[in-house]
Length: 153
Ligand code: CMP
Image (cartoon, rainbow, N blue to C red; front, side):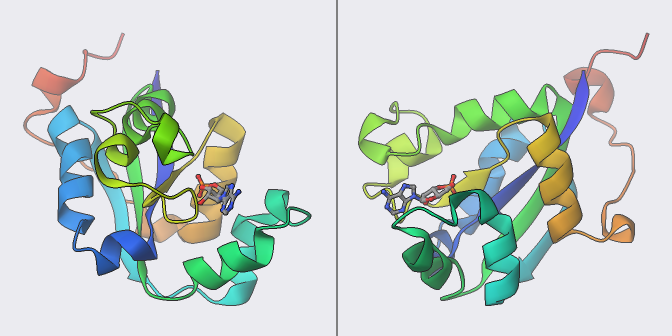
């Protein structure tokens, strides 16, 4: 099933010069970049993105962190993109993230875990709408699609 999902390459990844390496992993997997931008997010957008965590004790710190420096918002497309990206990102708590995942290879702290990825179809739709205007999501064909994606039925 072809899906779209949202990834945020967070401020710690930007500051640690890991943006290209992280996005490159998704490209190498075969996923298609259909939207991408560097954003300095304001508090109201950060609070909307993390609304589900509003009552958690770490909420204020999370908003401070995500607004502290630019991040890169990326929309990715491909077969089962939501699950594929989540599995590549690894567990939220980096000490539980398997080696070979992005967090398992590059992160140590839950509060600085480098990357956010949508956790299901409804979240993906809501998060893509929060981070991208519809005209910023681009439909296009890649020459490699016939090698990376199965033909449509
Ligand atoms: P993310 O996948 O962006 O979704 C929610 C974020 O909250 C999570 O990654 C972490 O960055 C952050 N988070 C979760 N639990 C904690 C915690 N105990 N302390 C600080 N930040 C947390």
